[in-house]
Image (cartoon, rainbow, N blue to C red; front, side, top):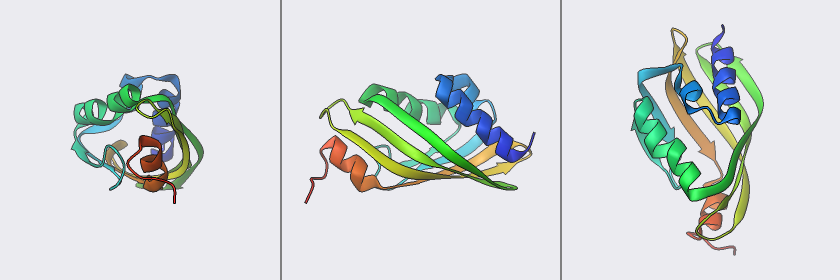
Length: 133
């Protein structure tokens, strides 16, 4: 299985709502970074930290939070997923959709690092942190 296949399997598990499948190929010390300005901004270390601090929180705070990946770019030990986030923030009832890029780093077929890039202003508007101008 190529590194790109490992990441495709992660996204397929995400589509199924299979958290165990999502973290199956995470290194024990994975460093998962959510973008500055994103509601869950910060770096989470270890699979359980990612589950508790990101995956479960998204489900608690958003209705129909979705990641639709359009493309997975195979760069060997670096894999990039490109797609769109969407969902409705429960606290405000506001919907958002924003393009996203995920940069994955892999070693020995396991994800050791993840970094998210997205338009955090669109998310902030949905949460009510920022207003439309």
